[in-house]
Amino acid sequence: MEIAVIGTGYVGLVTGVCFALLGHRIICIDRDVDKIDELAAGRITIYEPGLEEELQRQQEERRLFFTTSMTAVSCADIVILAVGTPQKADGESDLTDLEAAVRSMAIYLSGHTYIMTKSTVPVGTNEQIEKWIKATTNEAFDVVSVPEFMREGSALSDTLKPERVIIGARNAHASEAIAALHRPLTEQVVETDYRTAEMIKYASNAFLATKISFINEMANICDKVGADVVTVAQGMGMDRRIGSSFLEAGIGYGGSCFPKDTHALLQIAGDVDYDFKLLKAVIEVNKDQRRHIRKVLLQELESLSGKFIAVWGASFKPNTDDVRHSPVLDIVRHLLKEGASVRMSDPAAELNFRRSLDHPLISWHTDPLEAAQGADAVCLLTDWPQFLSIDLHKLKAVMTTPILFDGRNAIKQEQLVDTGIRYVGIGRPGMRGIK
Ligand SMILES: NC(=O)C1=CN([C@@H]2O[C@H](COP(=O)(O)OP(=O)(O)OC[C@H]3O[C@@H](n4cnc5c(N)ncnc54)[C@H](O)[C@@H]3O)[C@@H](O)[C@H]2O)C=CC1
Ligand SMILES: O=C(O)[C@H]1O[C@H](OP(=O)(O)OP(=O)(O)OC[C@H]2O[C@@H](n3ccc(=O)[nH]c3=O)[C@H](O)[C@@H]2O)[C@H](O)[C@@H](O)[C@@H]1O
Image 1 (cartoon, rainbow, N blue to C red):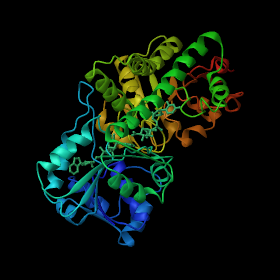
Image 2 (image 1 turned 180 degrees about the vertical axis):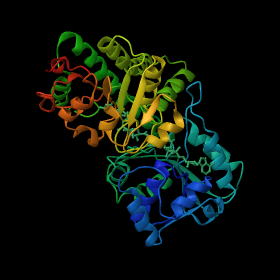
Image 3 (image 1 turned 90 degrees about the vertical axis):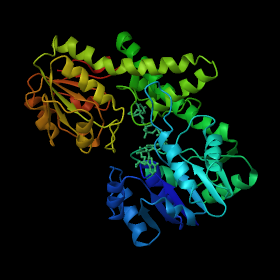
């Protein structure tokens, strides 16, 4: 099949590579000329393990092409919409890019085409997409909602082995055609209508965010009652009805989707006069969790003014250079506001972080131990494997005050033994004050 993908962010790029791997001919379209030039030369502009190698292989096989021209749509059997749907100031989804992409591609539709929406969109948007297309062309088409569930950092394997594919369509014919396209990837296909498909995406992200805020609140209580949240989560997770994933307490969720999608779902509920109390609390808890570290550091150091704080990690999670809504951005802003100097290290996200936050009191260091040199505290905020294997004896030796705040509960008890490091995790009071 001939497939055009509009938008070459995480979703567009990974989807394009995935369908090329299945033997289809893919043309990826983006309005960003520099990005398309890089991609056409076989270089990806994001950090995503394994993606660049696979992209180059598919280019060599002449199954994957890049262009800025929407005319490519005219040869496509399927057009995939994968442009961004960011958050507006009021929390609502901004559909400006989506509308522009739909209207500009519709001009070139030729013969029957399936329009597959992968962007995360509010309830009712796929119906709106139909209207935008009809206003532009008389060519036959079917819109199909196929929300994406991949995670950054494991995007390719998630897309090649999805746990389920959701297909929201207006008719059985369109639904079956898109189900057949996905069958080589999985048999777990749910066929439904547009609105249900749109809701499944928001419900999934909101539920995962709820699990995280729940365990973060449990962690805060564990700190006060002397229980260990890591073992609490382990014990809870053994019950298959609960499941062990997304129960890691920490500095709160970030990324390009959970913060935006929880706000968008609140807005969707608000639009139908529904007060989604639980989701409001999830968002509030997440905000508070980012402030937790400031409290801890103030308890340990009394004042942050003039102190040197090393921050390990900038991306919102490991294996990505994405800093969109990274909790680290907020935390570093708090530290600077308190008058601290921040010594940062991240294996991949320095450039993106600096684009969002640059400050004379922030310095960057390739070596995390160099960042810790002379520090009054080290804050481990993104659990990159590189940080977890650092010898904590060496860490203690370079610090002024050996305080380690572990915002990801990633350090193991054995690593701390005899190091003289004062350890503060999240909901792990038993690991405090090891000498
Ligand atoms: N990033 C992720 O892990 C996931 C994202 N999603 C959803 O998928 C959608 C895309 O997300 P990302 O890939 O992160 O987006 P992104 O923001 O990284 O990339 C979007 C791309 O679309 C291009 N674009 C925007 N308007 C365009 C237009 N009119 N014509 C041509 N190109 C245009 C931009 O230049 C950009 O390269 C969003 O709705 C997001 O919520 C869903 C699941 C996972
Ligand atoms: O809609 C999306 O864009 C995607 O959002 C998330 O994927 P992603 O944002 O890549 O990252 P996650 O691995 O889900 O982590 C999100 C945030 O939650 C945090 N997290 C995750 C798990 C956990 O137990 N605790 C926790 O704090 C992470 O550190 C990170 O900041 C979902 O997991 C994907 O299924 C979805 O497709």
